[in-house]
Length: 446
Image 1 (cartoon, rainbow, N blue to C red):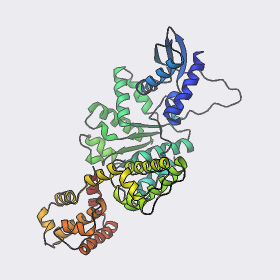
Image 2: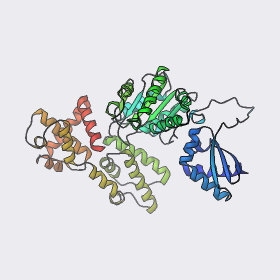
Image 3: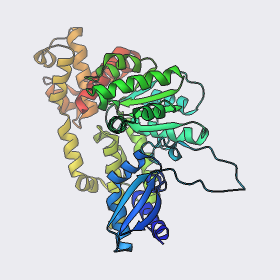
Image 4: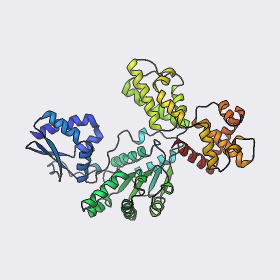
């Protein structure tokens, strides 16, 4: 029977696409019939059907056809699956991924237990935890922003997982801004805009990732604006992420930018050395479960934390590559192995930020001449930017203090060290200095 064949194929897909993707997109499908070589599937909503067609249709077809060569094609229709009878159990409350409010699949690795907290992200983590408690809305929206690989999406997924566990009665919808736009355009094309409005206004928690994507798209911005207002008026929680602050997103309407700043706007700062070290230590313990015990030589973890500064994903990928390589050849991870195995990443890291680029960016930011930064002037308006540039050069490059000193007009390494320590102290006590450094971090690492 076709249903038995589909059960076998479904299990094969589970191992290929992962448990969470399978639960979100494959389990909701019902294999209805096989007639004249055409397999008919029923999807619980048009969005699910369209998503499966775009992302998994080829895999499903190939698996079905390899099991039954008479199959010529597969089709997806929308309908409601018949309810399963159960005399022993009370009706269950539908969780978000079981309702028509299908959102993007959640990654099981992105939970609060796997999120390493450090000074650059502690406020964002605390705010996300507050929302995930599922209590009264205290700030709306929660707006998380920062560069690539700093943990925005991780926190969004963690909030969704936590709410599903603690408050299964809530309708939690997580999706990207691109998916929001796609569903809106689809609703316009199929003249189902009222269904779209009703669906999005019925959620208890709306989570939209990478909202900068809707900038410049007038119709989508208009609908997002009204959806936002409707949910806020109902005291429903909104969580938004972007790669920059609301006011810095070009072509985003002022009224939307203003409303996004109603609640709590939190910047996930670029990672510092201590946070990168903590992430690597946690990932090393996790990878041990996957690859088995791996010997890591002295200084390797510290070297990676110091050298790979731009992106946490790249940092994790580098460590995973070392674990995989070590387990295959049965050797300890040494510094020589790091240089050989990660040569491409290390070259990219070196190439991304140079002392000269830091000097130019800092001079532009503080509106001073580059020649003054490198020269002997000691006035406050010159000396402070110079020290910040020294600090960033130490943080973002692998250059030694004497090398940095030579690039700052031949200054002694003790002068560089003094400047670095001075800025590190001021960053903790002077909010303006901290904001300047964080902005320069983003500019240099973008």
